[in-house]
Length: 155
Image 1 (cartoon, rainbow, N blue to C red):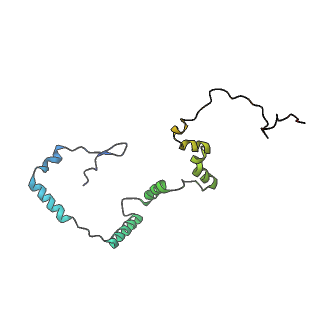
Image 2: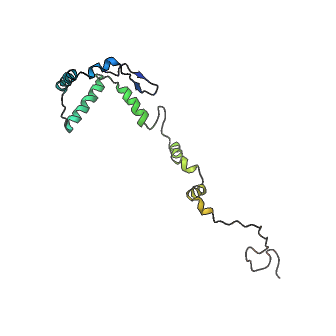
Image 3: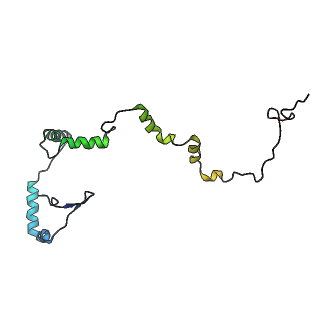
């Protein structure tokens, strides 16, 4: 007899069970509680389980599950395992290009410069000075600044 069998269930799956006075009337009677304790103590079996018994117990549970003797369906377990641990959804096939795109999607979303600047703290840029006036345009030879102007013939 499960006391939560008639309990109300929320949308989230939480059980709500409300106690009534008729369920609490036997808690005050010490003799009834002692008799109930003795009945449970004699009815319950102590399970001494070692490693071999654990494996045998697991195998017996799996065998009952496969034979349909338990209250659960093996297809439900397979569906949950596929949903939680499955790599591919139904109908999906492995695609190498899609796998690479998924693996490197986050790292390719930014340029290398953005990644580098993201690692630098803000205080690094506090002491960078910006010129207040425009720089003068100086005409000089880009190949050899010690010579004359670039396109003038010095002969």
